[in-house]
Every structure is written in C-alpha cells, then in structure tokens.
Amino acid sequence: MHIFQPYPIDLLELNPFEKIGAEWAALTAGNNEKVNAMTISWGGMGVLWGKNVVFVFVRDSRYTKEFMDREDNFSLTFFPKEFGKSALKYLGGISGRNEDKIKNARLHIAYRNDIPYIDEGNFVLTCKKMSATFIDAKDFIDSSIKDNWYKDGDMHTMYVGEIKEILAR
Ligand SMILES: Cc1cc2nc3c(=O)[nH]c(=O)nc-3n(C[C@H](O)[C@H](O)[C@H](O)COP(=O)(O)O)c2cc1C
Image 1 (cartoon, protein in one colour):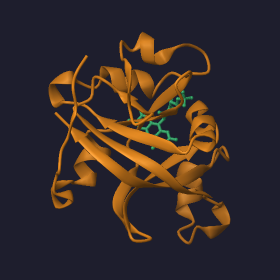
Image 2 (tube, rainbow, N blue to C red):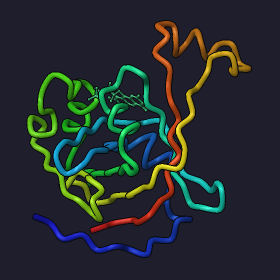
Image 3 (tube, helix red, strand yellow):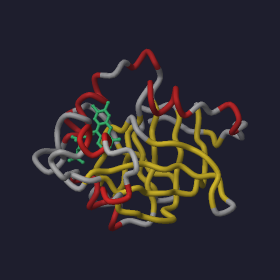
Image 4 (cartoon, rainbow, N blue to C red):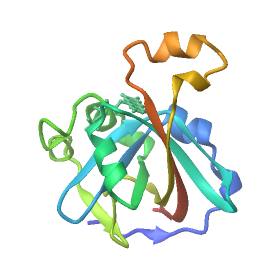
C-alpha cells in the first residue's frame, strides 16, 4: 500500500504529448464495487470552461465506456518508466467484460475521495466529468479521418473532465 501526497505540480510542467501520447495512461472509472480500466494514448490536457481539464476519447465498444457514462468521476494513472508497459499493454489488449483484467494484470485499485485509480502508478489525475460528446463522422473536415480510424463505425465519445487533484509520489 502506497501513500500518495497531493503534489502542487506546476501544470506548465505537464507535457501531454509525452505523458499521454508516449507514456500512455490507464483510464479508470467505477464505484466501490466495480471498476474498469483501459489504456489510452489519445487525449489532451488544457483549459476549458474556466477549469484545467483533460479530455479523453473512448470508443463505443469499450467496456470502460459503460463506467465512464455511469460515474461522475474518472482518473488517469501514469506509471514510472521502470514499471514498463506490459500492464498497460494488458489493459489495452483485453476487455474487462471477459475477465478481471486489473487483477490479471497484477494491478490494484485504490481510491482518492471515492475516485478509483491504479495503485501501482506514480502520477494520477483525478477528474470530475464535465461533458460527454459523441464524435460524429459528419463533423470531420479531413475526410481521411473516417477512412483511417472509423471504417468499422466504432466511434469515439470525448469526455472532458475537470482536474480535481494531481497525486504524485
Ligand atoms: C497504447 C494503447 C492506446 C489506446 N488508446 C485508446 C484510446 O485512446 N481510446 C480507446 O477507446 N481505446 C484505446 N485503446 C484500446 C483499449 O485500451 C482496449 O480496447 C481495451 O481492451 C478496452 O478495454 P475495456 O473493454 O475493458 O474497456 C488503446 C490501446 C492501447 C494498447
């Protein structure tokens, strides 16, 4: 069991290209009974509606989407480089519909103010859901997006979450 210290990190130090795009994150949502997590490498951090926010993109087919839609909060967990990527590959390759993948990836859930995150992480953003927007192919201006990413019609929903706390250790 690790103790997290809320860390007054300078948001300017947070590089979403590195943190999300290169290191990847575990997007986690659920309640005190059932939690699911999946790997993401798309998304961002920024400022919207007067808040510091993250935005993540979850396809219709993901079991995690059910949790994202049901719950008011979610988290992003980042892992130390030494931890490697095998657990994130597992969370990103197997669906929690079919097994307890958090356990099978040898990960554990912890909670911060009732928001679940992955205890093995060293950096966590806890977020309050602000909006959920279905990404509609009719809005694409660059027509290659549909062909490259949505041939099977498995569309993304964009969730914007207010960053409530940044935990680091
Ligand atoms: C590196 C990596 C990045 C991923 N990024 C996303 C993403 O941003 N959005 C998404 O919907 N799926 C993404 N996935 C796929 C999901 O993590 C994967 O489908 C997962 O098994 C879904 O699990 P679930 O059904 O338990 O929610 C990614 C997978 C990997 C390996």
